[in-house]
Length: 206
Image 1 (tube, helix red, strand yellow):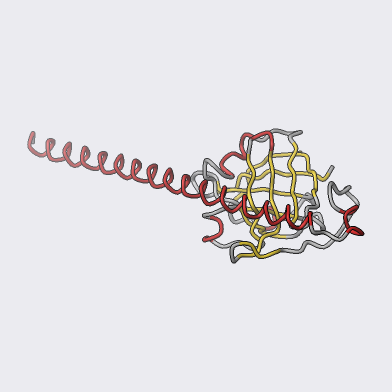
Image 2 (cartoon, rainbow, N blue to C red):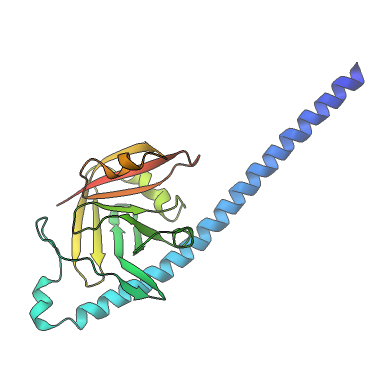
């Protein structure tokens, strides 16, 4: 009887150790992924910002008055540009959480490992949705945003749209219609740590 209990105890001990090792391995993997994303994102953002600066400096004089902050009723076309072999829409800036990231024009897993991506819509149709992984150096910071914080999107021509955070919410991971509903001008979202839901920040143009 004692031997049986000892065997069961050893099995439980080994199982617990395996779970701990698995959790530690997952934590280490996520940390490495986050660090790599941070490096990639900083480099991409720098390249996209350089492209935007050059576009602003070479803009025809008759268009120079159109560059800068846009009012909520100003609607122009979003024109992605190729930087480093991929299409980008611009740069997303969140001063309150010290985060600035280049926005890919489309989304896939490769792009999401490097920066954030346009998931749906456009800043100029007031239905812009941007997705990003919850890396600590990226959209993992979204939970630090508070109602009233300002967010800025700069397109590839240098036009800037200002947004104000109005609401944060958690949406079921399969609720695509819920993500796109509500008439929000800008929605930012990332996975929760379990992956079953999406932490979402809703914003209005100001």
